[in-house]
Length: 148
Image 1 (spheres, rainbow, N blue to C red):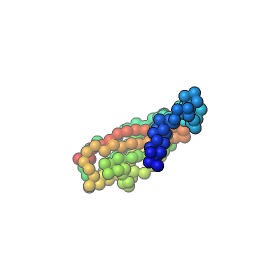
Image 2: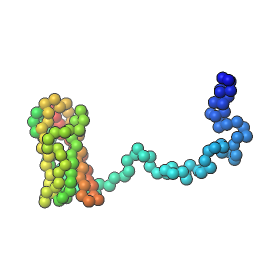
Image 3: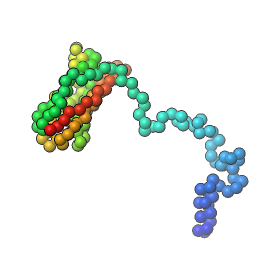
Image 4: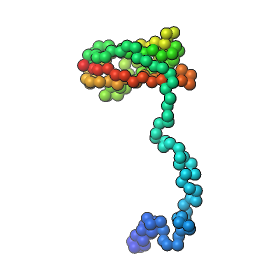
């Protein structure tokens, strides 16, 4: 019985016994070429699709360096009415501090976020990602500040 199982495994690993294929194709496999299979020529599902940032988002002011337990702020300029969100990416994860919710750009296109940097925040550079949308347009700004 063990020998039969070993032979079956070896044959399966080799594509079957001699005479089990037709025109170089193993029986039981699809006759459709790989390029014609669904998604064969499309991007891999884990790869992000191309994103076009066509909404201007500019940094106008930010706290460059801040001590723990003090306030930090970021001000941007974009298009009037754009909805923007901010992600302050501490080593412990994205901040949930008061003042970091989504905002809508005022009549001049300005938005300011202000928040308290916690007393236990890890010192060092902290990335900030701001994303904005207005209709079908989207924009992104990457910046950072330093916790001292």
